[in-house]
Image (cartoon, rainbow, N blue to C red; front, side, top):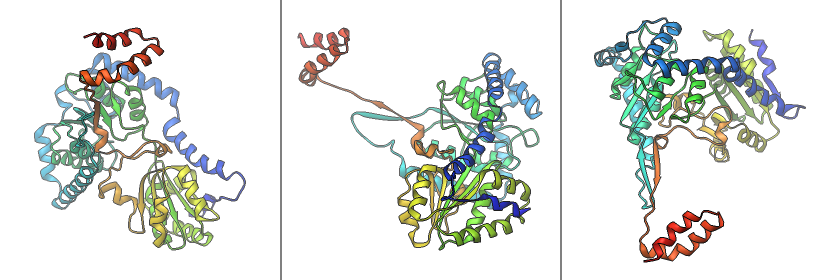
Length: 434
């Protein structure tokens, strides 16, 4: 089965290379974001209208329809007792790891935070209330809570609401609840999907209205976030996860293959290797074939590699860097021996850059400090990783005295009159008559 992977090899010198590379991302985006788009938009808008009209009753209905769980209004929020129970029941080792991850993220986010910057012409204030979407995957995702809530707390956000579908015995997985408890998040709600996003955006009797919604989710969650943007702020429209690895013959092909597979096991997920070495290409492909057969989800991972992944051979490293900047990957690894740092310095477009052989994506996903909520689908050309700075807003401060206004009055009046705004000009003139 792994012999099917030969077709992921791409040469930058072959005709149609650019189209082939673009097709990898387009195919993934079609699957994850655009498949059934028109029908999905209609369904999401119906959910939005129903929740806006019927509030908790609609949320409860959709939770029963989509998650198979019947809740009373007072059951939407996880009780304090259940949060504390989950916290007390997880293993001490896991709790230790969660606490250290929180500390790492808090330290990094505090160091990069600009909200304490002082200037008489600008004022920074934290967003008051945010909502975090945590997917109801088969495995718990406490890292999502950590990587979104901690930056918000560093920024000074006072109220955080977490929503996650009740896919674990009619509730939320205890590891997620334990992470929320550790972070002293009291507002945790067992709801998911477009109905949860809508409830956060407009508020209900039991679910508070927030000012910003962040976090990953399926097509319906992302579509709902797009629809409510404007009522509230959002972090991004998240697409499928992806990694681009830049490697030369100094890299370890087994490690590069392992990193590609770790991304391809997402559904969907994209793993692309850019290299200037044909020999390294062949070694990495051999490792992919070897390692993929050892995975529990080998068949699905092979399908993902064939659909959305590629190994691209370029003539030189300059071309690798040029195309890496065009691709603007969510995760970008550089494994090029002692040249890794210099190559990384030439990358302008990437959500996060992982430098060297000992910095796989998993380090950033769980541990290093930067949030793992990153721009996908090429949006790293114009957007950034989620950080504490995304949870503050700035207000411009303008304060002129009589003399300062007098110095500028003639110019302001001239500009206002040039735009035909007579009342603007008169608001200046009237102050010059004293």
